Image (cartoon, rainbow, N blue to C red; front, side, top):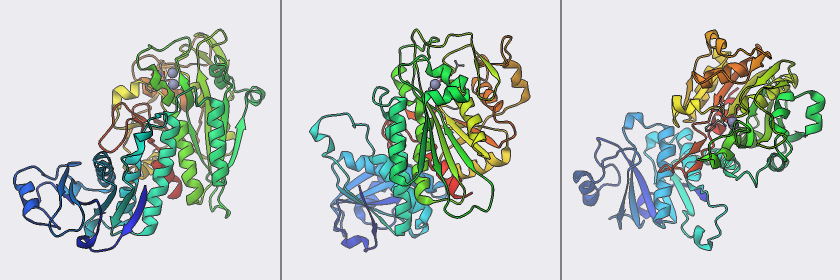
Length: 481
Ligand code: BES
Ligand code: ZN
Ligand code: ZN
């Protein structure tokens, strides 16, 4: 999609559609006219959020259509709302065969934040999950040009970069597991890093054995596909003014059958997005390479396939972690935390001073927060506040959950230092407590994205499938360090 800056007066623009935002409880603004007034008076257009009404041959305009796009309540209309609205506009108009759209915003919304958000919304909405559809007609309906009035080119460029990186993440997370094994995920990361001028290193199984990553290897051993620990490094050109080094760790289970503690068949196909955390940190690195924040950022993606088979680990197996502690694997389906603990230890050894992990870790977080909020856990509230503020600016919703010591009662093993599960109650919390045991005092945030990384149904502004959650927050966090 071609994105442009539009500066001409509305009346003279020859586009398939000009869109203006109308707010709830307000009358028509510019352009006005009898027909538009009637749409309001009849209640056909009320300005409710994401409402889209199309008027053909609008009087006084050269454009073929005038589109009224609902912004909801004016005082609640922020860049996050605009991102969604711009997306809803693109998806609605694309399905109608509209090829060129101009989005006209009031002067009040001409900031860079709003402009970038509108561009992001449009490009995220344009993303489809038809990569493997062979119908040659699939690309016939396309919004080819999307223009925005009253913006700066740099805000447009920023929005495009962010959306492309988020879509890169979505593409990875949507990939079927036969076409994205741990080895292939590592290849995709290497290709991205080479393209962006980042360093990429991939630790293979032998090296993991040498190092003693017993928890990660235990998960990997059931698969014919070897594991890979993907490491992507960004280093600022100038000597940083602090010793801070951000580590972004993303769960990279390319498929989660549950292992011997096997999952039910229904919906299991979705478990290809169990690497959405890994995909998110890789997408963020792609943007970080271009935006060049002032601190070093390293991404770590432990990539494995959690399979069933004669070599698979069994419930009751005891593994020795890289940190030296032992873990009793009571449930092979709680594999994410096993691969993450060895990676968190390794990230600290490589000098990361601040850790953020993103993982589709528990079904329990879906029960707690649904698909609306990411669940967040931390050993350092100040660090989490920093991330939450980045998330808020980027329109990604995050809700903190507690890590009280009382929950530790649930993590007792008779045979090893720790069990890998803590029972059904507070399942997301005990999973996070388990991770916390391996980060010591290093400021750390765990984001459970099991509920938010995948849309079971399309939204008016987003196709179904992988959402790319996390990318925008990680980039903002690094950039605003
Ligand atoms: N990958 C799953 C978590 C998950 C569930 C992601 C639903 C996306 C949607 C994870 O590996 C898992 O299976 N967790 C178990 C842990 C349990 C055995 C303690 C779960 O949540 O059921
Ligand atoms: Zn699992
Ligand atoms: Zn999993």
